[in-house]
Amino acid sequence: MGFYDRIALSRMIRWTGFRDRRAARRSLDGLLARDIDRLIVGHGAPVAGGAKEALASAYLWLPQ
Image (tube, rainbow, N blue to C red):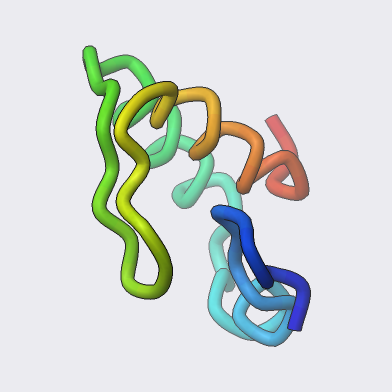
């Protein structure tokens, strides 16, 4: 599915879960503007540091 052992979204969710990609990008940009360093994910180990970079990397597929 494309997210083994890293912070990412499955390809299926990327293809079907985002009808309004501009709105999704605005929401993501708002989140990335915050001072975050840790992240709890649904599957896998929590990100203890560098969460902002990991989250930004997970959404590289979402156009600016």
